[in-house]
Picture 1 (cartoon, rainbow, N blue to C red):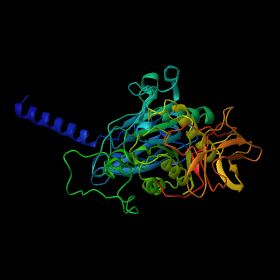
Picture 2: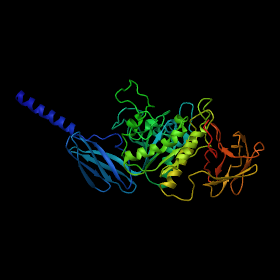
Picture 3: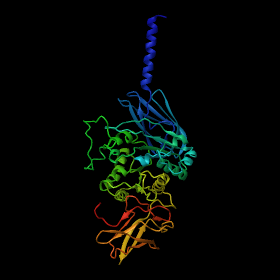
Picture 4: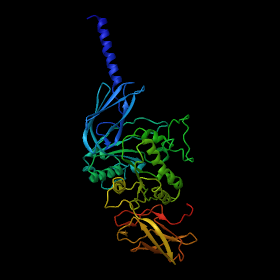
Length: 473
């Protein structure tokens, strides 16, 4: 055969190969084998194809095809109607060359975010265990739970993708996955009996401001937004917006039921601001997702001995408690009984995950017959030296599980607090201190480190609280 003919044929083959490669569907990491789609929703799916091409998305659960045209930049986006929980299914995406996403489940999807206590894996940190982890990991194989972790990354501008993939719920994957998120998802799966997808995006030691977008921070004038015209060689993960850009934006819009959050230690010294930022984060994410006011539940930080610098972390816990009623579909899980004096990462991650799950099961899924919130002070009155407290969220009463109540303090007009003798009554709690003949204020567990001892009979602890509004010290 003539060399010129061979050259032309070879060039043609290479050209076709190049065209085919350019036409290949490219999907962001959040879409892939083993993924979970939110059930009974119009779930967004997006990706890239060749410029101007027609993309077809076919879902195996109903055999339906959806057609969308890629833009000049190759980007496309559509929505697919998902059925009730089930699977496994396939999704075939094609612009002439099909890509098949396999082993897709349909169920409940939750974003799990925060700092190190959300990030802490089931295997624990170095010299910092998760209670009972070995048994939970060993018995974790579950076809109905799927896991994906967004890796740590900061960016001054919003990113579209990340490096990662959905993992099956197997011991080697569970060991590396967030313990709080896993326990949360496990209870949802056991209770609802549906597939559960968990998206973990967290970074230890980070403040709340980096997790919010530039638009979301505009209402908080004390937050200094970064100068995009001067990007430092090493970008700090504490810079406002940079974790939203790299670790939230790539998943924003993915079909979810809600989000859980475990963070606050890094903002301990600004409780007044945090009380506004916490609901601000939820509103920001809801606006970005564009699927309505999805629920967000968060863990109140545990008591811990932060040392002599900074302010008492009870003020941050108070801010978190007060924030929990600031907006709809919002709630807090209390872990006053799990703190450790010398470790900021409580080993009992099951309590955090389970109590987040109680919030979701009662408030989002409408389950009844069990509690999700601990006792909350309703009323205080005094008679001489005696103080009488009543509580909400204690329909069956209060308990200390046989221990003496040791966390109450009382103060008079001089604002000096003294330990109080407290006991549970049929109406609530009665307390007094011989050192305070005319009490005007009560505090419960209002210290940096303390183990809470007040619960409702369902076993949910009361948050630390105070009846005064005296200046933060």
